[in-house]
Every structure is written in C-alpha cells, then in structure tokens.
Image (cartoon, rainbow, N blue to C red):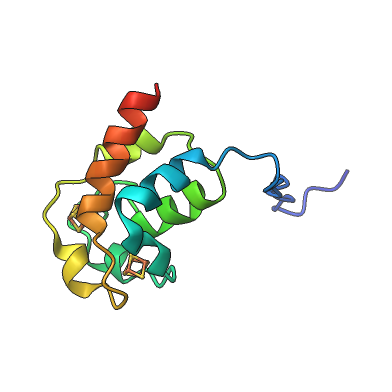
Length: 110
Ligand code: SF4
Ligand code: SF4
C-alpha cells in the first residue's frame, strides 16, 4: 500500500451505556460545580503545571464524563493545587477542590 505520510486514527467511539462513569458520578456528588464545565479550556491556558506536563483539567473532565480513567491518577498528581484555574473559570467551577476530591475517589476506588 502506498505510504501517504499519514494514517487513519484509531476508532475513538465509546459506548456510554457500557462505560463505567462511577468516578464522574461520585465527583459530582461532592463537587457539584463540575456540572457547569463547558470545556472552554481557560483553566488549561493558565495552568502552572500544564505548561510543562500533560495535565489538562478540561481533558480530565471530558474523560471522566465518558467513563475513561486510564492514566487519570498520574495526570492529576501533576497538579500543584495553585488555584489559578479557579480564578479564570468563567463557569465558577471549583477546579482545585474537584482535583483534590478526584484524587481521594481514585485512591479509595483502587
Ligand atoms: S475554565 Fe472552567 S468551564 Fe472552562 S474547561 Fe476549565 S473548568 Fe471547564
Ligand atoms: S490548581 Fe492545578 S490544574 Fe489548576 S492551575 Fe494550578 S496546577 Fe493547574
């Protein structure tokens, strides 16, 4: 087959009826403000850690709402809990508390 220099991405479809979204459900109970997240990315743009690591709160919110928790703990562990993301969030999401609670949920779950 001819190599065109690009390839087709792996299928990224998910089955929401089958995926385990228990982490998202547990988080929304203790930090209801996450329901207001619109995935705008302002938190990532200002993130002290995200500039040097793979940490992205926006991506984490999308992943857990889809029931995807692979590498979640190691990603979250890169957060310095500086709170800059809270200051810029247009939807008043308590991001720092969400991260702290998420780490607790993942610790008790595993
Ligand atoms: S800034 Fe707020 S609304 Fe925007 S992605 Fe981050 S948490 Fe969600
Ligand atoms: S609290 Fe964490 S996620 Fe928010 S800006 Fe600071 S390092 Fe980034």
